[in-house]
Length: 93
Image (cartoon, one colour):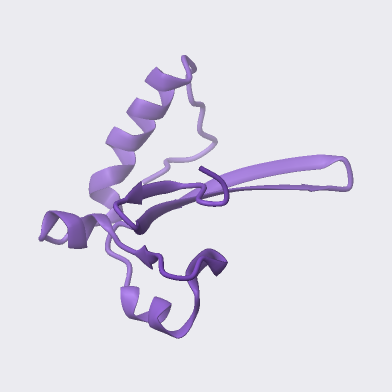
């Protein structure tokens, strides 16, 4: 529930989701932690949420998970969930 937007594994955020509106333009995006150096989060309160942590696919799976390993399955799932076809102006890999 708000304000805990994103994707969570227990009390740790694994994916941030955000939106921005300005000058009559909206944009949105997400950041999925694959093999992120999580030590940087020791210096801040992630997303301003006291008592919550940050995790990654690599930490949760106990092995290195590179962005290259996640990109294609993620995009395939995105197309399926949103019933759309993605069009690229250049190779996403």
